[in-house]
Amino acid sequence: MATEKLLTGNVGTVETQYHTFALPPDEMVLENGETLGPVTLAYETYGELNEAKSNAILILHALSGDAHVAGYHPGDKNPGWWDSMVGPGKGFDTDKYYVVCANIIGGCRGSTGPSSINPRTDRPYALDFPLVTIADMVDAQRRLLDHLGIDRLLSVSGGSMGGMQALQWMASYPDKICSAIPVSTAMRHTPQQIAFDEVGRQAIIADPNWNNGDYYGGLVPARGLAVARMVGHITYMSDKSMEEKFGRRFRDERKPFKFTPDFEVEGYLQYRGSSFVDRFDANSYLYITKAMDHFDLTRGRKLRDVFKGCDVKVLVIAFKSDWLYPAYQSQEIVKACKLAGLDATYCEIDSTYGHDAFLLEVEEETHLIKYFLERVHNGRVVENYEI
Image (cartoon, rainbow, N blue to C red; front, side):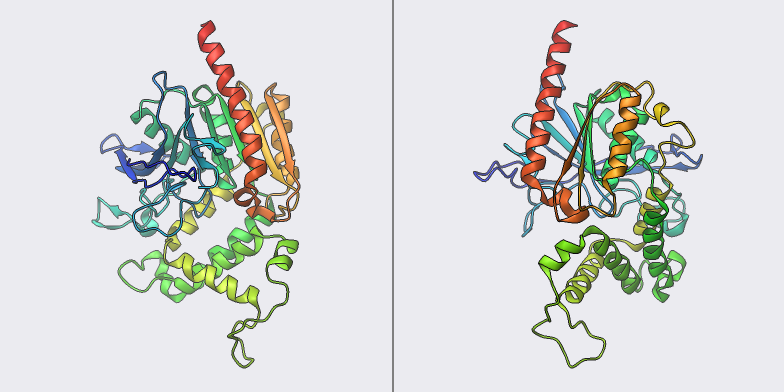
């Protein structure tokens, strides 16, 4: 990775890297018993791994995210999706920590997913791609870290679906992490959260161009995917943030009344939907939302048993106006941690941004995360010294 530190605290120009593993016949065994291989993960790294390899942090992305969490690719106008939090002096300070971010399996931004070539057919997988789970995504990330020579992470962190992955790390590989920072997330989806995902999926499936998932090389289900994204954006914002951002303002370029977008909020949603189509695969949207809906750390167990045997420090962050992942779901995570005897801290930020707050409330999150990581890192240094 090429890195150029700027005076602004940006990590500069970065390069996406790729790691391929699970080559046949040693394919990756998924949670449902199916196999997948070869598997490629796209990833980026920031900062320097120290000699003790004790300063590594894994950032986990949400539904529409990717490995490009910070900095710029050559020719980019906009930086990575959490650039405000990753870089020199920022919440995830790359002067102190070695930050890794990987695109999940099932994705479409460089990692193996439905749009990848199936080696058995030399055609895109489409719906032949196996169903993957949050646990499978984490298993793939663990293999990447083995490749990077990182035995134990200082922390794992992410918002929304990224938070689910952080929780899964606590459940699957508690001995591989020192701490976790789940943000705006849940241990399992509610019926309402599943319902929103299903509306998005049905919008895609109802698009004539979806063609039962076999649209590669032809017309993509652009209208269906755009509608799915529009529904998603409604849930990411709060009533107050929409009022402040759009109100009932009319668009300057609106046409004589028919069914074209008249209001600013309509134009915004249509823009978000159409721009999403340019960078995301519809089948990946189906697979990833299904993985989120099936995620359930409790699985019929009592809350006290969810993190049994786990010994990590946890910082849980929620936002008061987040109605997609309400604060009570974060409080449930904290309760499960406390019942398991974990050192868990809960912070609820008073924000009007809704679910998008985890990407926007930079000052508050920076303060909380920097302090938490310093505490965990210093504690680990002392622990290692005593050993």
